[in-house]
Length: 316
Length: 238
Image (tube, rainbow over all chains, first blue to last red; front, side, top):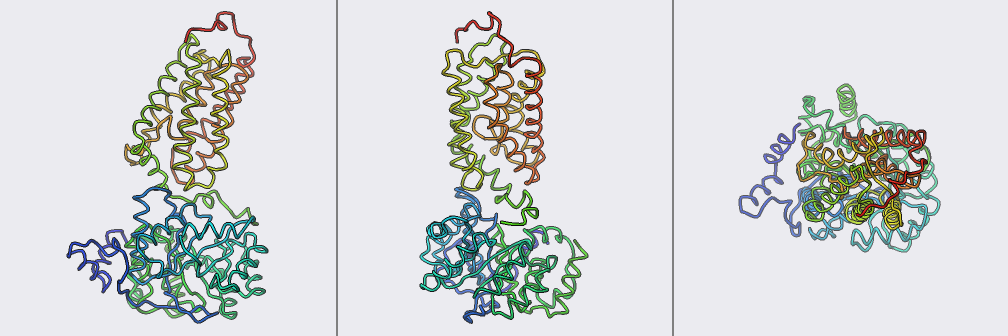
């Protein structure tokens, strides 16, 4: 689906867009150009974090590459617009890492601009073989936040030092959840070993209709052990949706209320019982809102999920 | 981090082409006068280096040193460092290049630049010409705005590329000290542009190949070791 089509869809769809259009007609600009204080956000599908039962919206926002815009104020404002659209559409979890260049600073800038500190489910990582505490202090400073909801050991780097550090922070009440991450299917066995031996709240892995290795062992294990699952690279860094652009959606997409390949993929992921929250990244406010809308309406059953994977497998 | 075999160059590039080329637009807009001044100074240095009479050697070296200082602080530190984790690791090399150029400029007999008519001179002149005139406008053919032009004297890639040209226009064994930093940067630039699917990635890579070839050729032909003639040793009035 082209950019124009996606925007057209959003303009014509449901309460979010209607409210945005009404606001625009009133001369106040689109919804995502304003602070989000006091806004009423739409209901979206929520999934429970097994270790506590707390429910969070089933789609989050990643920041890899897309939010690394340096000191360019125009691009920082565009990122803040993406965050605003995300929050306005009901999103909460934003994920970043010290590895992502200026992304943490840009998220901090967006939270300041939008006044959204009480809305965000803050998720970041520790990624160092050196002083993890020093890096975490820097991360907090960049987000301009006092404590995080979730901190993860990025790609298992310094796991023997950093995981105990995160558990210590959690025990002291300075952190709510602890996790580990991997991507691109790397070190899956090591991640599963950590899942088996440690009391993790979250694990973050790569999963999409093409990269399905985690379905076999990791996701069932996470489900059994009550570990919430964050999904990175749901669109393979955007390439999956780009390749599918222009291809007609399968007929059953309408049954699910999916109007784009991006939504169909996200619904595929959310429908897995072990998955808690995919975190697609984007540079466009309209796409952030569209992604969030995948967490509304019906989700595919097992049979339909297989059909989605099969169709996409054939098309790319 | 294990499983290094599974990592590709793209895994280490954490910014998009959109953000990368915006760096030049922002810098050109914000520092327009400094950017143009650096380009003009580079063009004057190029003119001096192309001459046959070994004049203006000290001016060339001072200009190049100032340009590298400006690129290091202006582009690399202020603009590129926030988005590219590689920059803090290579910046000491840029500072070393500034110092080396300043040292060469301050010697009683500075490095001597001039057209020799051999293959290395031709390659050096071509590098300088391309860095000054062609490289900034290549983006236009790829649909980028003119304001995103990468200019010699302010942007790192054409400055490194052009500096290799200046070195090839010089003579003397010690000039090779000026080669490693721009050469390594050209390799990094080529890899970065290649991962971003930019066809211009071949330009800095070709520059590396030709520079290494010319180094070998000059060593073989004795350009680096041959004693200078009395006429060449006469210090011209700059």
